[in-house]
Structure formats: C-alpha cells, structure tokens
Image (cartoon, rainbow, N blue to C red; front, side):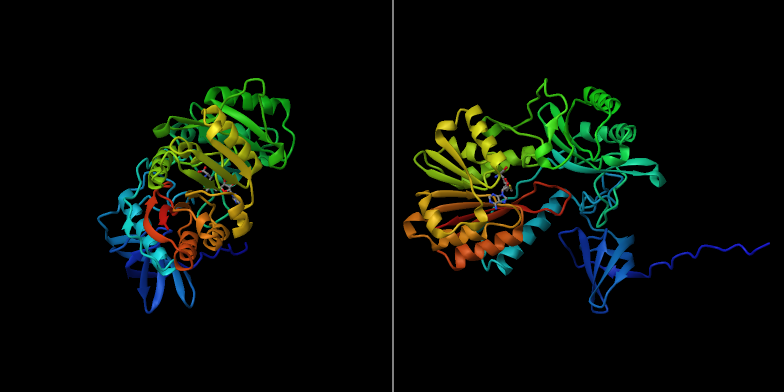
Length: 449
Ligand SMILES: C[S@@+](CC[C@H](N)C(=O)[O-])C[C@H]1O[C@@H](n2cnc3c(N)ncnc32)[C@H](O)[C@@H]1O
C-alpha cells in the first residue's frame, strides 16, 4: 500500500502587535513597526491590534487585524455579513460621523498640500441616508459551482472574484431582497454562463435592470425574465452587444424611470444607463447647497459645465435668468433638454454637446458672459476649463464658481490653477457624504473673484 500524500498546509502569516496611528481613505489603519509603514485592514485610529502580515515589501506591509486588544470608541459592528470580503464598502466598522470626519480631513489636507490653499471656512458636511441609499449598481454574475452556483454581486476587495452576496445594506431594501432570487433566476437561463452583468437603476416605484448577454436568449429565458419582472417590479432592458444595442424587453408598456429633487419641485426622467447621482436624498441636499452657494440673483446668467441630464441646471434655472449647460454625452444633452421641457424650464435653459477637456480661453469667451459658474466634472477634474477661465479676459471671468467634485485630488490641483495662477480665492469647502461606508469623497468648493 502506497504512503498517503498529505497536501502541504500554507505557512501561517506572521503575527505582530500594532498601535494604529491614523486611518487612510480606504478604511485601513496605518501603523509603523521597525520603521516600516503597515496598512492594516479592520483597524482604527488609536487601537492596538494583533494583525497578521499578509504581504511584506521593503517599504511597506499589508496586514489584517485578527484581534482588537484596545478598541476605538468609534468602532461599530458592521451591519453587513459580507463586510470585509465584499469590495463595495470599506468603512462599515466605523461610525458614520467618524467616516465623515476622515473624509473632511482628507479634503482639507489635499487642498493645503496640492492646492496650496486653506478655505476661509470649512462648510458643515452634508451627510445622512447611510443605508439603502445606493440607487445604481453594476453587479457581476458568475457561475461558480464550488461556491454553490450562480453568484451575483460586487467584486471582492482588490480582486476579480465575485463576492458571495445574499444581502446588501447600501442598496435599497427591495433590491437587496431581490439578490438571491435574481441569482437563482439567472442560473435557470439556458445561457446562464453568458450573462456576465446586471446593471441596476432604481427610480420612483420601478427598478430597471440592464442584462448584458453574450448569446441570444431563448423564448423560455424571456419568459423567465418577464415572470421575474412581474414579481419584483423590474423593468428589464437587454444589452446583446455595445451600449448602442440596449433596448427594453417590453417596449409596449413603457415605464418612466424618475428621481426627484424635492427642494426645487423638480422631477428628472432618466434612462437606466444614464449618469445619475446614486444617493437621491443627499443629491437633493447637495444641489440645494450648490445653488445656495452661488448666491443667485434673478438677473444672473449661469454656466453649468459637465451638466449631465440637468441635475444642477434645472434647479439653477429656477433662480436665475438663464442657464447654459455643456456636456460630453449627446444622450445626456438630449435628456437635459427633455427634462427642462418636462419641468417647464425650457425657455430659461439651453444645452450643448462639447468635450470640456479641450476648451481654451478663446472658446470660453465665445460662449458669452456668465457671472456664475457651476462645474461638476468626472474624476479627471476640470483642468482645461480652469485654465481657460484664468486665461480669459477679465470681463469673461465669472464672479463666483461652485465646483462639485468626486475626486479631492483633482479638485486640489484645479484649485491651485484658479487661486495661484488666477484671480480667485477659495472661500469655502466641505464634504458631501454621497457614498457612506465607501472611500469615495464627494465635495463642494466655492471660489470668488
Ligand atoms: C460627475 S458627472 C455630473 C453630471 C451632472 N452634473 C449630475 O449631477 O448629474 C460628470 C459628467 O461629465 C460628463 N463628461 C465626462 N467627460 C466629459 C468631457 N470630456 N467633456 C464633457 N463632459 C464630460 C459625463 O458624461 C457626466 O455627465
């Protein structure tokens, strides 16, 4: 009889005790040991933890807390059982108000370090709506027999694996409840290995799901989608190829996807893959604050740059004489014009398609005179726009700029352009906790000439 060969157990990770000095935006504790910085998953500022070192490089190490010897007063129990594995959230173990404080500090630091500016006043953070807030999500679907079948969820942390996700507390409750039935229904399709993604958009009273499928759906698959749609109030859209091929499963019963901006009595219509702000309640507060910070007068002419489907443009139009919006996506420009019409604001607004990453001062001047400007760029920021403003003749430079940002580092870079090379002062800045429990930092800054 041959000798049984035992599979070799992997060597255990070395354990160390660490005093956590601070926390980074990814929600990792930062500590030093023997001169080397350690990034510690699951550890908070002021804590002492036992951590296993999962990766050690000459200049840094990555570790995972396995025991908390001294806990922080802002530590809290994560609501989600998948927290720590699922890549959707980074900070559920931290009180929401402490999350906001971290984001606020990160914003101040970057403005000072990269922007070389200190706002005259920090704005009180906009926060709240911590759970069930996420009205858009792109979920990956993968059939993994070893894990029990079809998985539908976000990716695991820093990995391309799909997280096992039976519930999700940042998604609206009815969407969270739908996750397991959705996985089961997809597993029953004849092409179950060829449906890699479901993109969800939640509107008032209806949820749209865009199903990406690499092969044609059989009649029985379509029936399964229809039955699921009826049970879960899902309006299905299908995407057989690129984005231009997206179409509704049931075109004869159109459903209107809408979100509200209650402070302005505005209803926005959108399509499932349009850019919309994910947290509708916080969006209302953010739009109100941005409009307020522009200190509008009825005679003001306002530019809304990166205007999308008119999320800021329409509220701005309710308090000014005219709003001109620029945006790179033709579809969104069309949607903005339709939304202006739908909300009775078409006479005060106009929308144009333009690539705002290549605008120069001469073109800026050709747009006309606008005394107030709102800028809400993607993560890349608005460097060319800021340079165009600074390089324009004085009479074409707006009096007040409100800059809404989803990346504090590009905001800080653009701040330097407006303030160090241009005539602007950074008056106020503050965070908007649009994405609680995640590392995303949304913020607002106000510049005055
Ligand atoms: C952060 S979103 C803001 C949209 C809108 N303000 C809102 O609140 O819904 C950024 C917008 O910039 C647009 N965008 C991205 N790159 C662009 C470019 N190079 N030129 C113009 N617009 C662009 C996107 O299509 C998107 O609508």
